[in-house]
Length: 180
Image 1: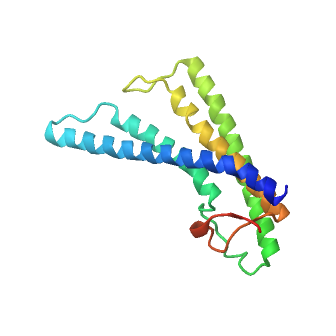
Image 2: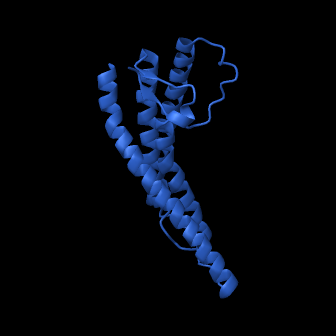
Image 3: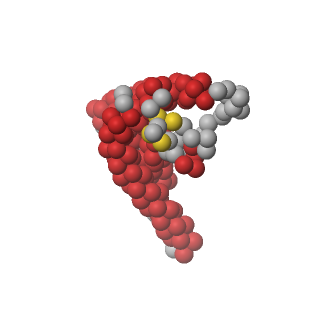
């Protein structure tokens, strides 16, 4: 895949990852507001918001799954490179490609099984204990973020392997860049 083609593939993924990250940030903000309101209700009126723990668990899982594609896109996931620091750049790039491929496979499997779980839980009619909300929703909203991570990681693996995508020395600070 050429540098130009890689850029064309990454552009819509970057846009989608950005939108997902904004939604994930909104979910995290809403969870924080829910927590504040529930604690205030508990302290001031002696009554927390019913189902606050269920909603918090759902919201945090949603926020994480929506923000992780952005982290993957920018190389912000934790990388333990102590043993590979002394390797030449091409060898490190190839190892990064293998790591990205493993991430793509892992997240692809998670997306598939999460979506399958949503169908299974929906068919069983499972609901949350306190709110009685359908459990399938909790599964279904995780699958798109996981699938997007898988797509981004797959494109990165191809680009890193071919040398059309470079991982900077400080990926967490500057993100992955298309090679010039």
